[in-house]
Length: 220
Image (cartoon, rainbow, N blue to C red; front, side, top):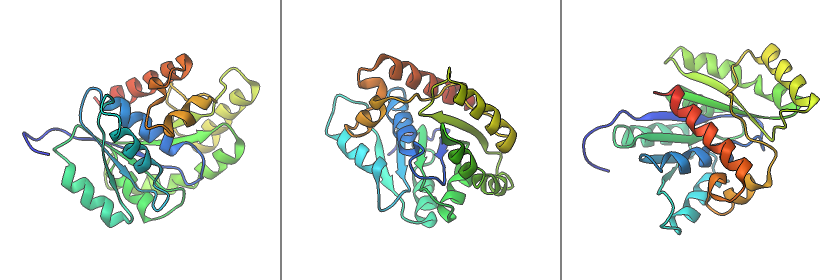
């Protein structure tokens, strides 16, 4: 990368429970943000590497917005990559691992905005409580903004309404107004190097655009 320095915005996607939708959110943001600016996607979930695999598939589709991808096996690797690309890209999106570790701490400390995906179940709310001490540590280093992101969400069900109340009471974190529904389009898009907005499902497209627009507004 070269040229004049830019004000890089960093988004970290962190959740200690597996299967919450971290890679779906990270790749969705990366692919959509790349349509209006430059994006670096850092896959910190090694050796699984879902986000990096998505980026490799996307590189084989030159008609799609380009995303530059890196991997980071340790928190030191992550710090080095962020230091290398900051100022030369508009966005950095970091996809975290499903565990409490130095990597999760580093992602939060490096983020302007931390997104914490939560699936629509009480167990995922309980697991998310483990992120809160890491978030408080990060806030001592920099003013990171944090938001919950509901995934696999059916907003008009009684369960969803109960879970929203439970999350507000137990976690004390603001949710994004946008959410990702319980749709096969997200898994299909991830496996094809696409975003759900590119995969043909109208509802998923609307949810994707709402998510990306809200993130952009929060980091203006």
